[in-house]
Image 1 (cartoon, rainbow over the protein chains, first blue to last red):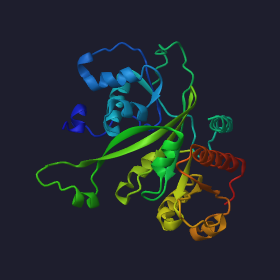
Image 2: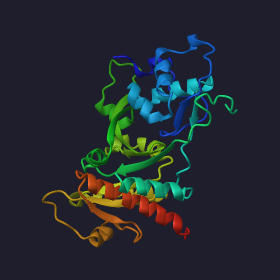
Image 3: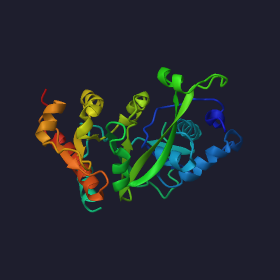
Image 4: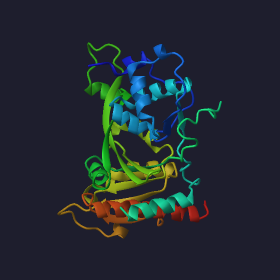
Length: 110
Length: 199
C-alpha cells in the first residue's frame, strides 16, 4: 500500500487560502515553469481540470484521498496552473434566488 | 493576486455553479439509498486523523506514526444544467466520523435529515447540529415496510421541532420520492430567504 501522503512528500496541510469541497477548479493553460517541481499526480489532477470541475470530482476521478488532492491543487494554484474559485455564495442568507428557482425547475424536470 | 491574464480557455468561462446539500441521519437509515435513487453516485476517500476512540479499534502497534485513517464515503451529483450542478453529501452516521461534518457543512445550502420512525432519536444529533449552525433543513421520514406510520405532527412533537420545519414522508428507494425530498428542501430554503429573520 502506498502511504497516501507520500505523493505530497509528507505534507498534510495545503498552502494558501482554504477552499470548499465544491469549489470550481480550472486549469489556466499557463506555461509550466519548472516541471521538476510537479509529480505525476499533479499532472493527473491538472489533466482533469482542463474543463471546469470541482475538488470532490477530481478526488473521485484520481482516486486519491481528498486531503491529498487538496494539497496537490494548492501546489498547482501556487504556481499559477489552476484557479480555485469559491462556489457561488450559497450559504444561508446569501442565497441567490434566481439560482434556487433554476434548481427547482431543474429538479422538477429530472 | 489575480490571475487575470490566464483566461486561456476561450475567455471568461461561464461560471460553474455548485450547490451543496447535506443528507444526515442515523446509521443505516437509507442515506446512500436516497442519494443513489436520484443521482449519479461517486466514490470519495478521505484520510482523517485518528480519533481517540478509533485508535482503540485500529491498533497502531507496529505501525509507527500512523495518524490517519481512511474514511470511504460517496457523494451524489445531479447535473441540472451544464453550469449548474447539485452535490449531495451523506454525512457519515457513525459518531467517530463527526469531525467530517464541519467540512461538509461549510457553504451548504441546506440539509435533509432522514429519519426512521422506529429510531427517531438517531436524528437528534443532526437536528441539533443544523439548528446551531442555522442551516435550513427538512425532515424526511423514510417509510420502511412494516414500520408504523406516525403523523407528521406526532413526529414534530417527538423531535421538538420548530413549526416551520417541513416534514415529509418518503421512500428512499424511489427516484420520484427522492426528487420530492430535494424539491421540498429547496422550496424551504426559498421560503426562508423570503422571510425576514425574526429572533
